[in-house]
Image 1 (cartoon, rainbow, N blue to C red):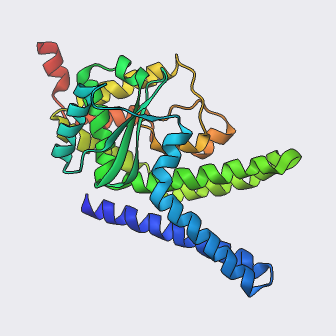
Image 2: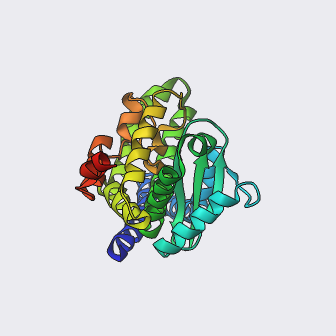
Length: 278
């Protein structure tokens, strides 16, 4: 887990440095040393803002609002207990005020993170399944996946949204900027992070079945509830909530859900016999 955390920190740092370097090359290509300095300085400010405020950007973009302890003491207590098991500081809790069941984690790592859950998630999942989802997000916090996910989502969303300034050239710009944004996402994020977070969540909860059942329930629910959000936010969610189209396919980083469930079940190979005995 420490190796994964160090690797994620290095990836995010290198990406932000690369962003500054590309900006410098653009300035140099325009033929002036003064522009090179200006572009690098501007890119450095943007990189610093992404590092410091990327989580707030994502929370604002998705409409999340802070969830006071008094409004949901049981949820806060559950997160605090699971955070202690994971060995991380208790993240802040935010609420997504809609019926689509989903959760995500953003931030910089074990000492500074936020978990957002939707009203639909709290309504749809029984306690054991909700614990599994929360433990999964806390595993991302512990491994600093939240840092790479937050950085990737902010940069990719910014690039995609830049296409809107093109007016009648919007589609052409999106055709160019979309794959570039996708490349940033896939350079930072691998499917393996989800498998590792699933395994860590199963260990934290003492059973893999709460999370496995939650994944199945979430997939079924996404087929019933319409969901709209920037396509580049796909990496932060527990499962991929988007219907397939050309743009959302570019940003898919989650492994097949059936494969995740199968791996979780394999952590308890006797589960079928236990179920029959019950």
